Length: 477
Ligand SMILES: Cc1cc2nc3c(=O)[nH]c(=O)nc-3n(C[C@H](O)[C@H](O)[C@H](O)COP(=O)(O)OP(=O)(O)OC[C@H]3O[C@@H](n4cnc5c(N)ncnc54)[C@H](O)[C@@H]3O)c2cc1C
Image (cartoon, rainbow, N blue to C red; front, side, top):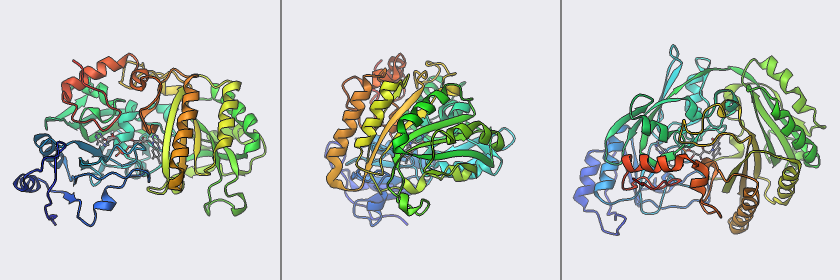
């Protein structure tokens, strides 16, 4: 059913004629949602509860033709755009005030070719959609660890999964992409076609166009794998973190693990008497035979006496949904920052533990992800992503319930991040980044030698910076 048309203004504050909107609607098969429509308020909400943006119009696309119509309508009428995949970006880039939100959340089909071991995934799919289809064939694509996260945003920014050390990031498993450009043209990007665009899409974010389809190569995995989830009391933090840092030095690529400073969630999955107890968690997956994984990861379960050890053989699909209940859409105000660290020596470990002790919200996570393995075997200039040498990614995922605590939590997160910057080369992972403010030039530091080339690719494919609600790379010829 078509919506009733309402007046909308462009980015210059000029009202767009009703006939123009009518013409757009006639060329649009999906749904146009205006401010007065009853589903407007639910459609503008993204994962982070703190994001409260009011788009002028939301265009829920059903396919490539709708995306082209929406891009052309916005460009011809001077409207700014935001692009929505899974809506999980913590900075809220999927929506914006007064923009046309091009929403792909109804484009979620996944088609697996079990012979070639590839999958075609539409631009609005979530990782749940991908895992569901691929696991039917005993295959997997490296994606997010929360099932509702969008494939699009996660992949374009890199993509860190529970199998990252075995097969690299999501971008390292991307074979090709269909893209609608700012001029409304539809192109394919791969190693052999528009190779510069394909290079830029792998780490350069949503800067270059709207990806309507991703083609991934898949890996044999599952249905069952071994997962370590061992919660130690926080008083053991020093011992556990130090042991884990050493363990990761020689861990095989099949083991991908994180060390997380957290609190036991108030959730029926956990004994009530432990709720909100501060813990340090060692979590990780073995991407291989479960019995091998159990043996190899046993030391991670014996660092001290655990408060709770949920390590076991699980269906891979279950692991991919394990964190869902604690990170539900619209539940938590969230401000995240992160930084790559080459090393995590004793001094730095102590600083992280000290900062974690200051955390007042049990929902917050301070996660340290072990990297390298297959990630670092791809050269820093092979994809736009840039340097891949870091051993760890520290992410400060501050999350809280009460709006009155917003400022305090944002300031604390920035403060912690600024302290950590001194121990890093300044590269951040844009997928876990709430803001672009920092003492240094975060884009240049993060993309390094690739920054200039990215600006040139941007100038070729999006010379007027039409796609700018992202970690924005300005076009430079
Ligand atoms: C609970 C949670 C868990 C997470 N877990 C992981 C994880 O395990 N690993 C990891 O690497 N990251 C993870 N992330 C971070 C995640 O990668 C980013 O938030 C990512 O931006 C989400 O993608 P999305 O499509 O859901 O986002 P959206 O908010 O929809 O979009 C994010 C950005 O991508 C652009 N974009 C979206 N769709 C398209 C498209 N089709 N074409 C072009 N541009 C597009 C948008 O314009 C925007 O700039 C997690 C985030 C959350 C909130």
